[in-house]
Length: 96
Image 1 (cartoon, helix red, strand yellow):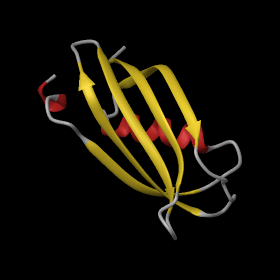
Image 2: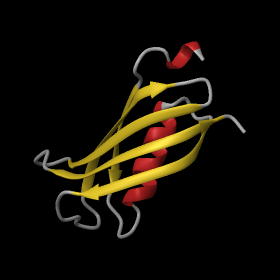
Image 3: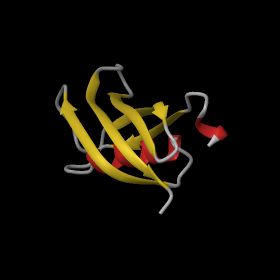
């Protein structure tokens, strides 16, 4: 699991959709984990209004990884002014 020894970050731009923010943040954390992660738990906290169609800047990072679990965080901000929209914490199982 040497590829997760250092904190990994993933940044991307997405278009906000109604009800799609959890999926966007989950996928960003999976990408930061290297793509081979299975969700075990997600906790999503909204911090501001979401305007469908607005551009969002999403950043995800790995806090800690063990042999079988990955602990990650992600946040979404409005791309135009940087206002935080949501934060998400996730636990992922490694592999299948």
